[in-house]
Amino acid sequence: MLPSDRSAQISALYQEMILDHYRRPRNKGEIENPDETIVMKNPLCGDEITIQLRYEGDKVEDVGFVGRGCSISQASASMMTQLVKGKSADEVESLRSRFRDMVMGNDNEPDDKSLGSLRALSGVARFPARVKCALLAWNALEEGMKRRG
Amino acid sequence: MNRQSDFPIFANNPGLHYLDSAATSQKPRSVIDAVSDFYETSNANPHRGAYALSVEATDRYDAARKRVAKFVGLADPDCLIFTRGTTESINLVATAYGRANLREGDEIVITALEHHANFVPWQQLAIEKKARLRICDLTIDHRIDLDCLSSLISAKTKIVAINHVSNALGTINPVKEIVRIARERSDAIVVCDGAQGVPHLEVGFDDLGVDFYAFSGHKMCGPMGIGAVLGIRSLLESMPPYQMGGDMIEFVYDESTTWNVLPHKFEAGTPNAANAVGLAAAADYLDGIGMSEVLRHERSLMTEAHKRLAEIEGIRIYGPEPSLRSGVVSFTMGDVHPHDLATILDGDGICIRAGHHCAQPLMRRLDVPATARASFYVYNDQSDIDALVEGVLKAKEIFGHAAV
Image (cartoon, rainbow over all chains, first blue to last red; front, side, top):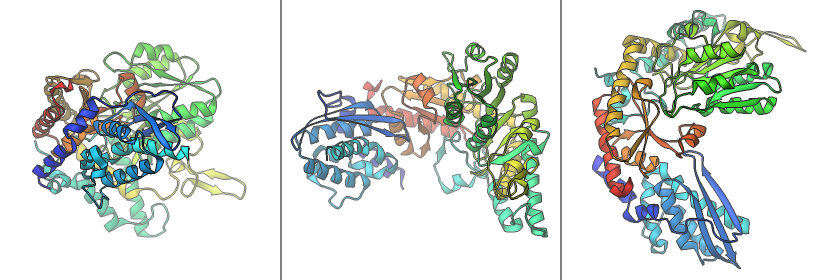
């Protein structure tokens, strides 16, 4: 690979939106009366994230996260909390599955507009070593939704 | 002097700036050839066959043991047990010596500077034996606090386990002084994790005075999957075996078994003869440079890298001053996570380690989740420092000046 290509991939990875969510994470902090608290670790790097969920009926009423990590894991968690609030279990699962496909590079529709701001993380697919970072919060979310049943 | 031509990895990866030798070193052609040559000319199962080829394989394996023993200053090669590497070596001592000798209420003293491989085996042994694990604190510049160490070692101490050189920070520890303190205050054995010692320093086991010394081949230009533990003969002879199987037995009765002599008692199963031969070739390669030159070379590069990184606003470097370190510089930059830094450097072919360096207890004490670590070795040169510094500045630019 030409160095210039790699450089372009780096620029695509560290988009302004990612750095913005990293610096000013949304929904960071504990929520009131959580129904589920899920701790997820990335043993590779020691990063740890805690996701808290409160449900109302079938819907995610509130979600927050705590933890520290790289820009990819923090931005991914921050954007996730914005997007899943108010969504039903089925909608959350659909979003999670399409997001996962995108960062794993399995995406059949690379321009899946329904992913919204999450598309800023599409560059992760070019960095296999960073896929786990992008998925950390989402794996915690999956576990939380599973526990809910 | 440019040694990159000795290492095929560089010709196969143009533009590579390999600064992760503390994780694993690259391999010179002579080591790769020695492993191939064993398989191509002498391959048979050592100690098994009553035929010439097996005898030759055995001879080469034995010669490798003698060569490696000489490299680490061990006069009695039978006290060198080949293992898969440092991790297995320490587990061997913790299991075979520890289980047989530790009692409830005894104490094990380690330090906050240990790699998980010299931490977890002792922690788990302590739990199993209801012994107490005591962790020595560090000085403000991340060296082992010898006053703290003295205060922790007492008649209750049965094992003192310390690293020779810290993998995370490069700190070179005063092993002889630690041995002196341990002997003065206890009857404890001293176990030394030399994974980062042997590749960078001239190690003389007999002179060092420790009871066990563990190291790996792959960090010293040798193959992966081979390493050794050196031990005091009387201790090795009094210990029960570590693993049971072929080669380590003298005679197997229906109801009992007697053990083979050293070193075979601790080498159950078919040995990793080809990689032992490769490790001996690595010893030849390093001796060809001279270990004092190895340290001088890597330290001079690291010292310059340290100096230039320290000039960048927001950089924090961990560990003592460069003259007390091997070729490692461990750092963070503002709020830029080390993983992001490593990804950005990787974009320019620069390989550094980002993470906890298998030293989470240390990271907690440094109050960081991770650091970025650049480690220099015999094949690195000025261009690697330039690339590292440029890459760090680029990361700083990407993350914006507000990063610090």
